[in-house]
Image (cartoon, rainbow, N blue to C red; front, side, top):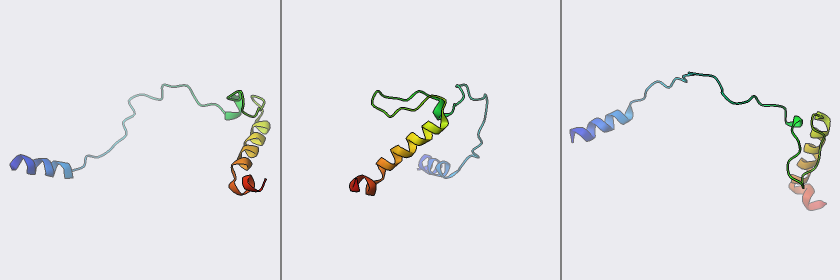
Length: 73
């Protein structure tokens, strides 16, 4: 009974949660999305490194995902 009470009491306590940064991020840094090559063989194309063509492709993709436009067209 004493053990159960001690465990219940220990479960109610909370330690201070501090983020400990022992070492920095080890991975590679993120690049800009328009610097990547287009993905699958079937996906719309944009020129790698061209932000304007990438944004145009994203806008076009968003229009096809809008339910009202998809039903009307």
